[in-house]
Length: 322
Image (cartoon, rainbow, N blue to C red; front, side, top):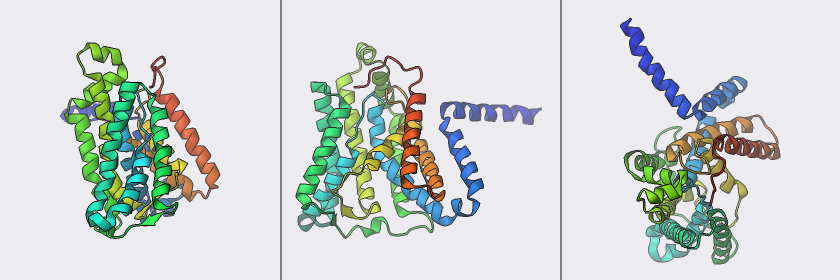
């Protein structure tokens, strides 16, 4: 009897966790499906390492914007920060040496502050504002770099192997992930950002400085994107990129929405984005092993994004995303 009673709280916690994070069920189902279809290749060391590498890319791009999405807004500037910051690293390397890598977080913080102030004061829709900034940063990066990717050496230690089968960039990313989750779980920032996303006017009447916290959300996005960009710079080739790729913009959004953070805001956060990133990565790697044509994989990823948005938006009709 006592053993049965002890099991009940455990089962209750598991049920509550799965109810709050249904993406976990999807994750486990994908492991079962792809593990059954491709038992040799899916659970191979090579595929395991590939999953961790892609997880790092998705997570470090998506963590920062997750704070902004909580308020019912979007921040697509992460790709622009990575590109322009990388080009500035290449430009400043002869002068600043190894310290030139700080240009990526500096670009992130400045970008977050700029977007936050402009969006809050001028009331420009965040999607249009940040998308325009990405295009601008892409053009500026190409102009500074002369239209070609520029390799930058000296940061190979970021990707130097530390533990067999575990990408070192995954290890470097752990403190960033912990910091993002800490801010959500252990500070009042989470409460305020969720309140703004749920009912901005209600939050204002409750005494929350709405403009201040909207700007803070964009700055947090810039900070996490910039710090993560240091890892991603070497993780994605160690060169300043000047070509904008659609997947780089779309996939982090898939991770955010798939994890359970609705684009209308009010709930979710980085902790759910992490679950979304690992689930999407497993899904993509399973499709990759199936040898489907790349265009078919792109189509399926688009369908997953649409379905995720529809599911996450249930019961949120009438909420305006700005």
